[in-house]
Image (tube, rainbow, N blue to C red; front, side, top):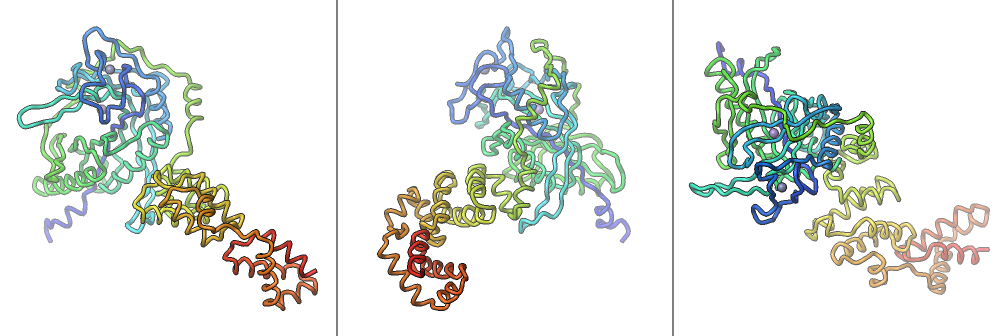
Amino acid sequence: MLGSDDTSMAQLEVIIGLEVHAQMSTKTKMFCGCDNDAFGKAPNTTVCPVCMGHPGTLPVPNGEAVKKAIKASLAIGCTVNLRSHFDRKHYFYPDLPSGFQISQYDFPLSVKGKVAYDIVDGSGKITAQKSCGITRLHMENDAGKLTHRGSSTLCDYNRAGTPLMEIVTEPDLHSAEEAVAFAQALRRILIAVDASEADMFKGMMRFDASISLREKGTNTLNPRSEIKNLNSFKSLEKALQYEEKRLRQLWEETGGPLKGNITVGWQDDEEKTRMLRDKENADDYRYFPEPDIPPLVFTAKDIEDLREELPVLPGELKQKYMESGLDEKQAMQLLDQPELRTIFDAVAAKSDAKRASSLVLTQLLGFLNAAEKTVAQGPDAEAMLELLAAIDAKTISGNAGKDVLQKMVTTGKSPKAIIAAEGMGQISDTSAIEKLVTEAIAKNPKAIESYKTGKQAALGAIVGWVMKESKGQADPAMVNEILRKKVL
Ligand code: ZN
Ligand code: MN
């Protein structure tokens, strides 16, 4: 047992902090008027002398980007500094035409926030509720994109100058699982406040993860390994799992933590980290205040006005859905699919969460799945409300409603059109209803008896019988009227 692996490994604790870069969803770039949506556009077509770093050009901060960054700051619980400024961060790289990035260094836009997140097990049950401190949020511009082809490199500067938020966390995360759960919660918040589309496939949200080990019960922060440029939750998770294992092995071999900070890159194809550089200090960037942009100055009222514009945040929304009776999985479906949420909310507002969940989350999603359609390709909120109204007015029964909904999904037609075309509408032909009522009276003598002895409610059973017999298609108002006349 002496020096056994198990004993030494069990005593180590994992410390993880993240730096998250999220592109802001503005019309134009951070410091010029170029189109900020380069997706699908030919390389080097959304550029100008400013974002190409030509001498003599002047950057002008994008007010929309600043507003979005402030809203994001408030949504993650940060305090916005009433005075902050931009700095130049120097490094030389082909994707950075000016030779420096305009970022924020010692006076960032906002500081000291906190994001709550849940750890969920495989079955969708919440197993732990945690939170991660946010050190700061600052703004900066993105670099261009390099594509390596053999020995040559292609440069596309369409992305150069795209507004970024960099969000730095406290080293509060203790596993790859926690890091991913936190990052997903953060992503939902950025989307909810419309600060970023955070589309992972388009590289709109990227992570750098710092990981170190320490002996349990101690508070030291040992030198960390920083894993650069993780573009998906999957690579964030895999890279952290890989690096944790590697650092544990190193600890065993050397009897302690890393001797200094290192920077590594994650190789998605090999599922390994690779050493990039072994030291790097803020000094190396020769930060200094950006002389071409005045400081950003806000009043407390400016900030409070923006706070007023914040929507209900995902954490609160999730709680609201779960309190209304949905489970974790359903609540998350609604949080992650705004189009579905719009439909659900509309239906729930006219009925209740239980019916909305059955109609939207079970039936609608089921039919969409079967038809291999997305929510956007299916019926919208208006069509769903029309269906709900038809069921509530007993134009069709709940069961017939299912058939109508299926046809709404497959044909794209409105409920009214389907009900009319299929002849599913209610029967409002007097003679047909009279026939059914006569039959109902003959078959339910007891109900008639008790009605005649003064029990008004007994008529309900007769109406129910007619509705059932007509498969919900009889007009209940007419049934009532005719029945009352007949039993008088
Ligand atoms: Zn430009
Ligand atoms: Mn950055």
